[in-house]
Length: 463
Image 1 (cartoon, rainbow, N blue to C red):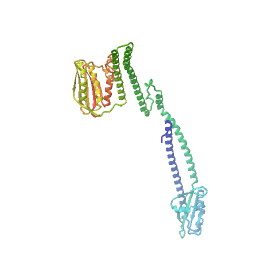
Image 2 (cartoon, rainbow, N blue to C red):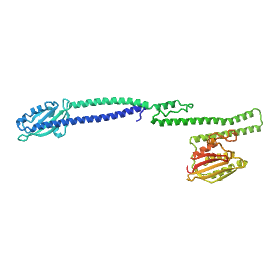
Image 3 (cartoon, rainbow, N blue to C red):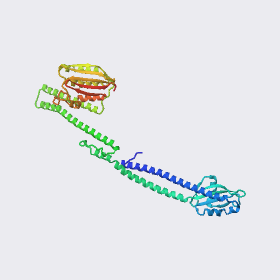
Image 4 (cartoon, rainbow, N blue to C red):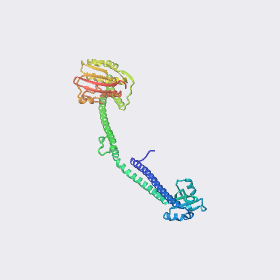
């Protein structure tokens, strides 16, 4: 069963229920203890009265003493109005020396009970506890008497009823007080949570820098406050990246769209020959291809951000992929008089097309930034623990400033902002490469000095 309503009401209700349960258990135990105490008192009182009667009967040595016994008993017990007595002498003509009618009707049951005491109610509503016991009268024929004694315990029963009534009222009042106190305590204790709710309700894209204070938060709430602050920090970072990404997209798309518009406006400004229109269309086609590549790259990165890239399960020989890329870029490398060299070999489990795309991005980047008459080196080696493969692509060239190394994998980032964007890629290649490597459970890093710049990839052998 699920509780509904506010958390404060739930806590107050549970607190009242637990307090009520404990009070009821305590009340039952207390009632039982008082009842047992009264039973012990009554049994002790019965035992004392039997002792008195046994003493009187022990000195009854004649018929006259036996006849006078009721008067003696009345004299001895004259101050005990709550006692009823029945003495039976079956061996005599007078069967009962004395017998209260309230006890006579219970005589047979007391005989069957033996030494155990019984409780009962008579017709008048009174409550009694009684017991029967055989005693010997020292007459000439040793007459045996059956003695029955009962105590009127109505005052005890009345006290117990009154006590239970007042105890029940007290428990109900205590439960109500516990509910009220629990409500106030819960309301005060949940104040930090209300501050979290209030802060969350006022959140917007412009107020993500807000943080909750840990100083006045109780220890039980500090984990929640820390988690909430961490969420705000992640949201703020995501919004900043989204804003920067949106601005970069707008900036990157503006250039090809502007080129298309300018070329088209010039083309339609006056009548031109078929060759001139064909030249304009070819120029526009290049810009459209550039836009298509950019959109494709952005969609790829969006899939990577949402863990939607395919999980490859094929064995990929890295040296084979690198050699294939050497053949593909051979013409471009020859234009700059560059040579490409591979050392080592190794295989991993992954998607061959995605890994080839990542290596292609790094190799084309190296060719683009390597001065003529130099060598681009690719090293492949297995780690010492035989659990991963390390692949590095290094080329001589200008060093990348240390403060810019962490930024080279960011989207649309270029180390040299003045470099012409046309023909220099969209600025998404290294971001795509990092996404592919991370999708395969690997890592990519960059080291750069005045002599060489190296991209180092570490991939697990078994993903």
